[in-house]
Image 1: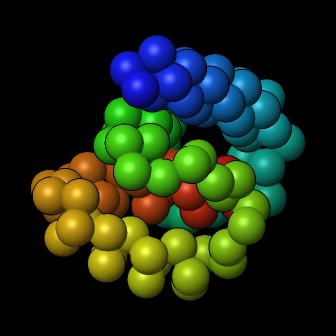
Image 2 (image 1 turned 180 degrees about the vertical axis):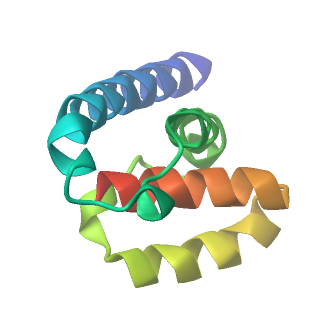
Length: 102
């Protein structure tokens, strides 16, 4: 069981790292078209990715952030914040990650 969980967490961290890499590569092209107020903070995005990998993988198979729309992720994170015992800051970071990856 522990080995299986370790593999799942490793796969999640690799996926998050790849997603973060793609996010960072795409940022300069989007920066000219997006007002600064709507761009997610890269540190918040990274914290959200790590929190998502560390907490959500405990109970779920890792989902592709593109599976749900931004408004759907907002509802899911709101619900799972309570069930996963996340702080408000952690939930906001996870939401920034999921919506930024969408």
